[in-house]
Length: 74
Image (tube, rainbow, N blue to C red; front, side, top):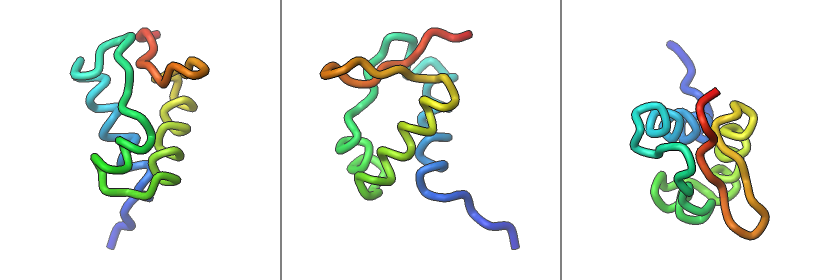
């Protein structure tokens, strides 16, 4: 029986799908970590890890005090 990916990875994968589909275009501000937690019904720490995963995938960038935004496609 295959193991399911961790919650944070499922959240990150779903947000990546939204970025790739154009639902979240370059420059679009992502929901806050708290809002992502509510949208996906996960803990705030899980939502934070998902956003960190998106940073590692070079899909988003943060601006101090502004939020997290979708990066331009490479």
